[in-house]
Image (tube, rainbow, N blue to C red; front, side, top):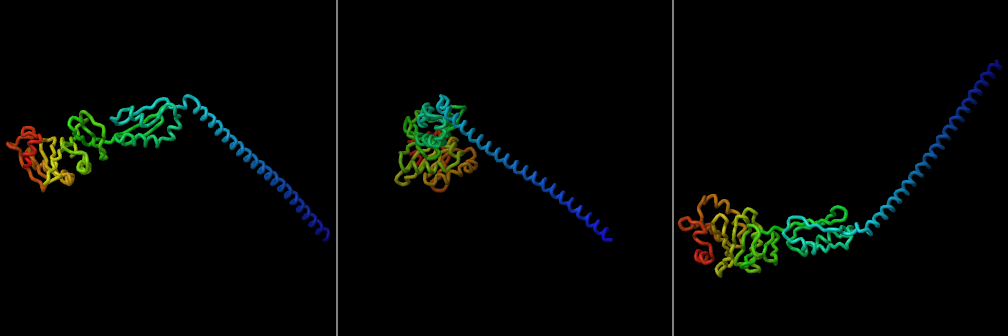
Length: 294
């Protein structure tokens, strides 16, 4: 009986030792995994260092290349091209930009906003100027003009009135385009007030007028006379001109084909030309305007 018990106990001990052996084996395997894990971590660190050094090397090479480019002839501005919707001579725009072939391309692009402001400040007709790189070492300056909405008639010389209200000092021998002529206006507050009113009107109204003459008197210092492209004549006040002229298309529909004087000074009144003749037949010179106003 005791012998059987001892044998069972022995067997139990043998199983325990086996389990110990298995545990030792499992522990050794875990140790191998830890070693492998540590080795993998070290490899990653080394790979990260290599990438870091490679990045520094790349920046260093690019820096050398950039320096070489700046020192080479290709680093300087070669040509400056002017493009865009403008009537300003290219030479004036080039001079206003102050871009020269002695400057570097990178330096020019770095001062892009300053150059654009210089062009717009020196040339009030320029609405927008944009500086761009074209190709490798050429500069493109793209410009856009303010639109001319009218011309001031100074006898045989004409000054542009721009959409922003600016009156250009430069004079033309002939007006460019089919824009209204402002006659008998003197430079000063009255003209500025009218330009402010005229700018409020839409393009359709502006293009329907051929001439606007100042006709102020002591009784009405704000009187103006408009010659329309369709042959009608309009009498108005410059201080409320924009509010009333917008109704001109509706008035034309009511008049049908009749031609005459439309008085918008107080209310709206229509007086047909004699025998329904047009303005050209009745004459539209200053003497006849004064007689009609009297």
